[in-house]
Image 1 (cartoon, one colour):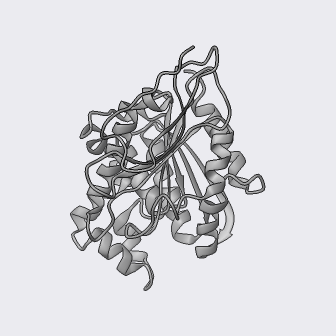
Image 2: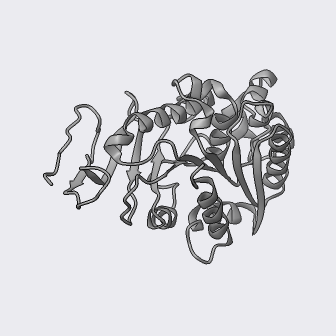
Length: 295
């Protein structure tokens, strides 16, 4: 079989794709080996990295889309994703994408959520080029990225704004977020975190409520959520509240708490997820397997 090389003008900012010749019986004539710095929008911050599965498959793999944390003001695909996570999930046969988005104060949280939805729309549009199954996608986020993933998974205006429906996501995985109810979080935040929330969400109670995933739990929502937290009081409290609100409206929710306290535990969940000895790894693996199973 002759390899077909696709050259799509304007798709890549840097680090363009590397293609391999196909093997007999492969599902596509082109196999993407590596893509970095793919532009999903016109702005410099609107880029994503795509990591294909590390194992061969005769069917197109599911896709995990990861949203990094950083207090809405910091972070990128380079320093906030966790290499163990990428190695593990691509080794399990999943494709894995991680996105950059505009940061506060140069952008609003609303624009950040729209960037997440825009990246999803770009990935769906280029699923054939990249080689994954657009009918099997999961959105995953850590910390501020968990808030953004939850917001996109509960407030339909972001997905609808990019001609996507919420049921195009099989599920959402939230890793130790703590801003699912923004007014409550700001009221209870300590001296160190309060300025971070104030810069992201401002002082308008109506806006704070609109940016709270729990305020959109009445639906429509993504139908399946995996909500994980460590032993931070605010993270536990917010995770439990969101889980209860989503369950009450018919979403399937698995809520799990893990050891690890304070900032150390919060960071460890992101960096160590994917390591065999981290207890959350087996939980996420089991949930993904069930979520991506044929309907």
